[in-house]
Length: 201
Image 1 (cartoon, rainbow, N blue to C red):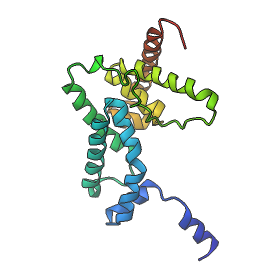
Image 2: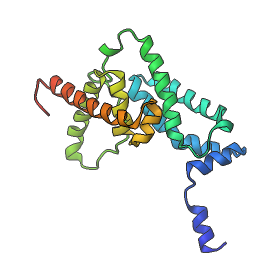
Image 3: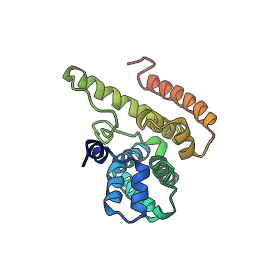
């Protein structure tokens, strides 16, 4: 094997190639796709529902649906927005069944259920406690927002989807994504300040 061939073999395979391989029956490709996406799918479900049980059910269902329809999936499309669309739709089903969902914060006092964030924790021990408290306050503020504001914020700020990908997940034009995101960030800021007694923290 030449050096170029060895480098190519060692390079990570992109999702499009994995989908093509999985469509041809390669079990390893299916396993790699599941490994790559199961955490982000679970985290999004947890962020939207506030329930680890619901998040586990939704994430498992999203992956099962993806693989059950894999042969009809366009391998040129990105995988994550398609999975996130399933998660979002299932989360909305749960929201509709919860009569008091707006009264329930994403985390309660003393609850660590939302330590599942995408941002890696810093290695600075002096900032760790302050950062944790800030994340908890932001989650409490996020929890009082409407579902549409909550989902657009987590898609952009915690999962780093592009505007085009967000439009795909939410089923709205890209321009609408931008305007909704602006309004959602303002609503989050207002909710955060309100829970802090009108003062930033």
